[in-house]
Amino acid sequence: MDFFSSMRVSASGLEAQMKRMNTISSNIANAETTRGPDGGPYRRKDAIFEATADRESFGEILADKLDEQVQGVLVSDIHEDTAPPRMVYNPSHPDANADGYVAMPNVNTVHEMANMISAQRSYEANVTAMGAAKAMAAKSLEIGR
Image (cartoon, rainbow, N blue to C red; front, side, top):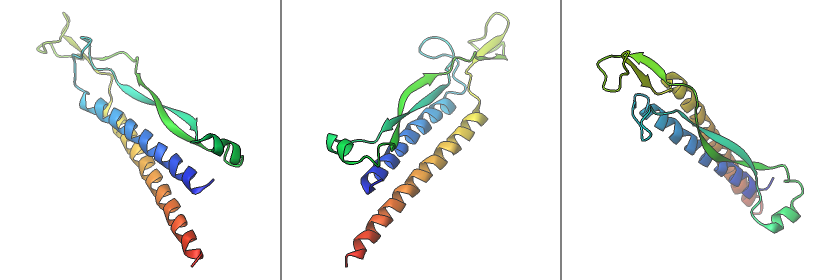
């Protein structure tokens, strides 16, 4: 894998994890939203990752047979969770049904925080990989002196 391929793969990971963290942040921010644009409670969202070939030009495809298995990542979709809402008894809430239950979002903040920590660690790993590639490139330039 060449220097630019490793940087592109790490950059795609950074972008994907940033989108994942934004989605998780949205879930946490709306954990108590009982009325959304469709009238029902907020639905939890997940970022769906997809592997993508790391090729920029036709010349790279022809020249680099060693890197044919190198893949980056991208967010292909933001999927809405289909789990039913949590029903919480609160008869004084304006969105309570006839039995006094309120349909709350299907968001578990503890689960979301664990996902956020995982996304943060993945982001940090990609930053570290980019730093290592940069350091190797700088050292390789020093060899010629």
